[in-house]
Image 1 (cartoon, rainbow, N blue to C red):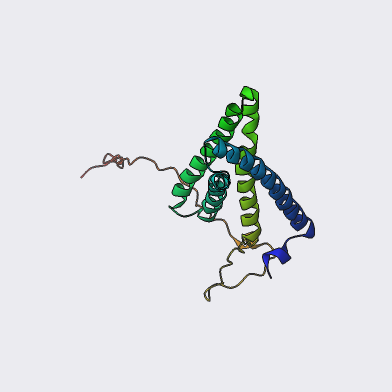
Image 2 (image 1 turned 30 degrees about the horizontal axis):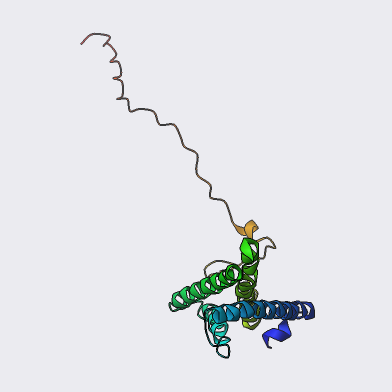
Length: 197
């Protein structure tokens, strides 16, 4: 039976709804960040017909590194892609802030410009987590092993008690007697002789 067949319909519907919402928000964030980074590349005298490559490289790196970080969760190579992700996010956020300031829109626009690349980073990561959780095998419910019942030995007669503890006989310890300290025997008095020889 596949993992999808084991999940209730409501869980599958909720997961796919979340994937759809995260995908739409991530796409919107990508478009806004793309426009700002492309415009920044044009301001930096990149030819207009090539300016679109700058946001593809920057935001594409964020998407690729996020997927790699999740795919390599148990691998030592994950740390490399984590550094790539941090670097890509820093360039994207910095580029959006620089675009807002270079366009003369002020600090308020610069703060607002952080939203698109940050949302792209978070939504890409969220989408990868959702898809990874969807494909992860569900753990089988843990079963508690039944306690082992010792087999009766051939030298003892089996008891047919409904309560297994009733067949256990308590160990009785004989009472302890007080011990008197050793005393040597007393000499018996010798009777005096009577009569003559």
